[in-house]
Image (cartoon, rainbow, N blue to C red):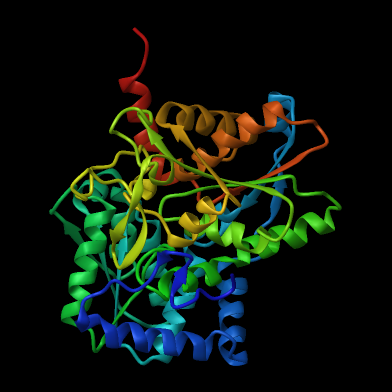
Length: 395
């Protein structure tokens, strides 16, 4: 499905928005369609991806990890090596360039783990624009380093004190701001969520990941058997998966299982959610019987979201992509194993995908290839891991 019909992937997606936002969304779609295939725009976008962000990222054979597990060969798509330390820069450069073409004077964004906020601040600094970022108060505490980075880059961070004080609430506040300042403000959304055209636009900017995997595996003369990525809102995952859905590779998205799916402390929307509307889209949500959004939990701030991108919901329902989950304990174990075997510290978000890769590799033949999108690096999470280990140390 190249471009969603009427802004929908099957029944998912759409534009469930207040009337005040209709002109802004229409203006956004019109400009995106105008510029996405424009030669000059593509040239400028690819230039920044290459010489500013650092693309293409390598596909690394994790030999030590693979041999320790003793099964399939694990390859890491090294998005953690991008400028800023995560895949987020692919999308922020694309959208910031689009905002500039649209002559918007002000950019706002939301962030969970802080990676999208930092990437927005970086892209705006590089393109000579100002950014303001909404971030749940809880996330500002556990991701202090990223708050400092945004401030240093010249962006203003607004801590959000409402609700669960996490990503959902940051998005709510960003949307409120946008409604108030719609004429001069561009909302640079960080994941493949929200009203159409955001999910397709973010997917398109991030699909450079999957395209590179395809060509890199071909150059290595390797068959891609399984591809894995973590899923919160789902931008690194849809960017990885979309160019590969027409292949015969097994595709697996990994959600945050938190304390376990039987508890209420998780963020595994596709594994334990039901259909509903949030942030302008129809998708799977974590909600109660009255349709109220329930509180989520994940050790990783970037996956702590009660919804998921509508295209993921679509691929789940047509059974093209499998969606599994990893608990906090499994994530920490995978984090430590990758760190100690390969000298690569993954983001906690990415460690969800590593956890699944370990499970799959154990059951695979040594001739099989498993590619994991390592969506970000783990510098930001070292303190969180340290706290977890000190809390759970055996007496």
